[in-house]
Image 1 (cartoon, helix red, strand yellow):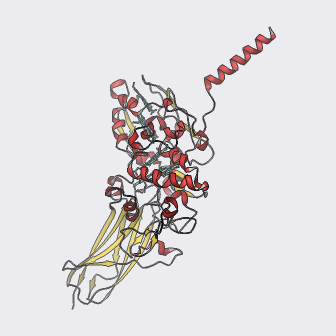
Image 2 (cartoon, rainbow, N blue to C red; image 1 turned 90 degrees about the vertical axis):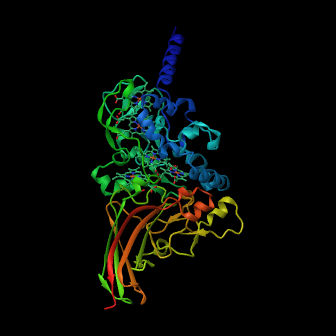
Image 3 (cartoon, rainbow, N blue to C red; image 1 turned 60 degrees about the vertical axis):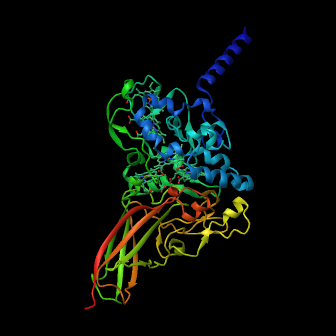
Length: 455
Ligand code: HEC
Ligand code: HEC
Ligand code: HEC
Ligand code: HEC
Ligand code: HEC
């Protein structure tokens, strides 16, 4: 009798455990904790949420594993390096915690190449985001989201009914910390090599409570599930996630105020120019996130009445490490490719790609353990000066130019342009990336007209 009772209790205990399941794990500990089958494919969601699915399919979230540069950097740089150097061994699995969460959670490491069509290809899928219940610790970073896939989808709106699934109202999805679980990254040296959420939090938008979702998932009136009983709402979250790959987001992200010391000039005279460069649209630094490989630069040129172009070089401001923020025709970098890929006689690549020498580069240089600039964020042991464009903040750049004696008389156009390239051109060519991966996009432009005459 007594024996039976305790077995009974034991049975209830086991049943309770099976019902609630073990507590979901987060971050590195979640590796291999959830089989692929636990997650519904995006096509399931698309049947009832067609509009959101169409938007999402065009976003980088959907391509976070399959997109060419991600594939190249993971398979041709990160995996070989992880297999060679114990210090960075964790990235072989870790990159996937953000880029291929299904494969990471299933313990399918390394995932198969995108061409093989495994479920890794689903990237940051609908069911990944909508199964995240919270995060572990105080700071969101390195995929420390807590994920609990199943029948229940996490959402932020109370009082909804769905024929497809249960809904848990979870304010976490409406918070910037939710995004921060993948948009902050600490590398094996303990450096914040990606800090979009932290930049936001410390900046004016974070302080004002203007969240990532408001700019990247703007609200619009509509119905997310019109054919299956969904309700109309004035503020349905648009799943656009436009960022560095969308010129609508990039164009106009930077404003330039250009002014000259004189309006009327004579050939041979001296001109002083000031360009005030402002980040007026992004809630974080420009560039943010993968700052190791983005290049943002200010190019200033003069065009005389005869159509001749003159390139102007920025005046150094005199801060420490500034040489890394002024484009050079001869500086080399990225020598760590030699160690990563086992190359012999590799001298490095042009540090600044195609950026014209003398242009100001708004960047945060990532330095490898030997102090050379790198695009391998996992191989970053220190940083150069942070000379990016902080949100709602301006940087002043100066130019001095002695007009040539033979300059044409008439109007002199001064043109300032801030360009953005997602990958340093030299690196992109070395990695054989398609040209669209690094073609310059205009962030902002401004011009003024001066007058040149001999009298
Ligand atoms: C059989 C149809 C159906 C399927 C399949 C379906 N949904 Fe839904 N879902 C709905 C309906 C209807 C609503 C209620 C929408 C409303 O009234 O605003 C809803 C609501 C939601 C909400 C709640 C939104 C909020 O603000 O709280 C989320 C999140 C959601 N669905 C995600 C998903 C995901 C992710 C999938 C795929 C894994 C999915 N749905 C599959 C029909 C479906
Ligand atoms: C599970 C991880 C994860 C979560 C959560 C997440 N992201 Fe991302 N996000 C990524 C990855 C990975 C990429 C990189 C895609 C690529 O390979 O370019 C990305 C890319 C982006 C981009 C850049 C697109 C581009 O065009 O360059 C934006 C914008 C973005 N995410 C916004 C958000 C916002 C806003 C949230 C929160 C609502 C969020 N993300 C939550 C993983 C995540
Ligand atoms: C005030 C609007 C605004 C807010 C708030 C905002 N962003 Fe952005 N974001 C932008 C704009 C504009 C761009 C395009 C310019 C650029 O690439 O920096 C951008 C670009 C990005 C990119 C691509 C960056 C790059 O250079 O590769 C990512 C990733 C991103 N945002 C994620 C986030 C996350 C995560 C948050 C919240 C922590 C957030 N954003 C908050 C407006 C915003
Ligand atoms: C990167 C994470 C992410 C991905 C991927 C994602 N969502 Fe969402 N989704 C969110 C967040 C965050 C919200 C709520 C934002 C808020 O309330 O501020 C949301 C809101 C929704 C809503 C409620 C819309 C509304 O406002 O009424 C539905 C429905 C939904 N998602 C379905 C989907 C479906 C279907 C997919 C895939 C096609 C998908 N989501 C992919 C993060 C994501
Ligand atoms: C903590 C989450 C996280 C981890 C870990 C992570 N990434 Fe990313 N990765 C992102 C996000 C988010 C973006 C988009 C940032 C942006 O556009 O600013 C990104 C962008 C990229 C890009 C640029 C994509 C583009 O289209 O320009 C590449 C390439 C990349 N990651 C490769 C890797 C590799 C390789 C690893 C492992 C060494 C890795 N990532 C680890 C979150 C992560």
